[in-house]
Length: 324
Image 1: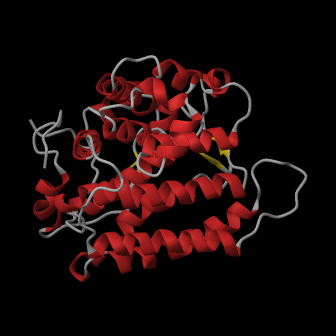
Image 2 (image 1 turned 135 degrees about the horizontal axis):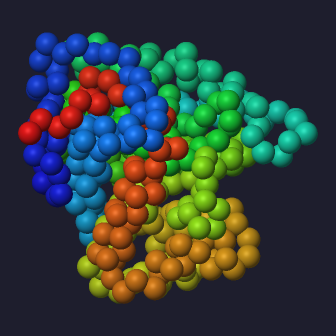
């Protein structure tokens, strides 16, 4: 696994044997309850493993289209089945009539189904000898789809899904061979289910910064999507605000899929409704965009208390400090 900016020993596969040999799993819980606790998070093994996972995937998709060849393992197929089930439940749970346009309460009905079934769904994904991890890893799946009280969704929920995938790597259910499929198949399918949830139940953006945020709901697909474009012979950052380019290439590039969704959901000039992305289109190269987005992700998501106070820590993503 590529050691891109990772702390030593934070590669998920490296930990797989260690994590599962005589492993004692636990139900993850919140550990960051006050702003001063943020230091504990940044020094934690969880932070090192999470960031290592994001950067490893960033490296693996560099310069590659969705349509390139890669291995699709049995675990990946099972994860796609799980996501298809969540998608089907949306079809079976239509929005209800209510006075408020936003935050349709039918989302709570949909969520309660996931809340009840998550462990069972996950048990079907995990290899038989890893079944004991289901109750720990299922927590991240439940955290990844939005908040049923507020009926909102944001980058903290997206981070929970990345944590879910990281845990599957740590127990060895996913391996280094799955890296491209994790982003191009599993994460991309997750995004399509989240977009359907956002549209169907008119979910509010969690902690949105309005036009000053990168996007109302997502961040990671912009990081990995910009990496896909590195060293592209013709498409430069200035091209993604061109609708013709988006329509022609969105099936090959995650970044353009995100832009297409924004264009469908928002009206008015792009520079007004998505000011940060408009500014990014002026950056000369994709590698600079990619580096800038990683920095921004750390500062705007991972180092923000309102996001990280909801993050949960267990045996696989531990609050314990990184071992020196």
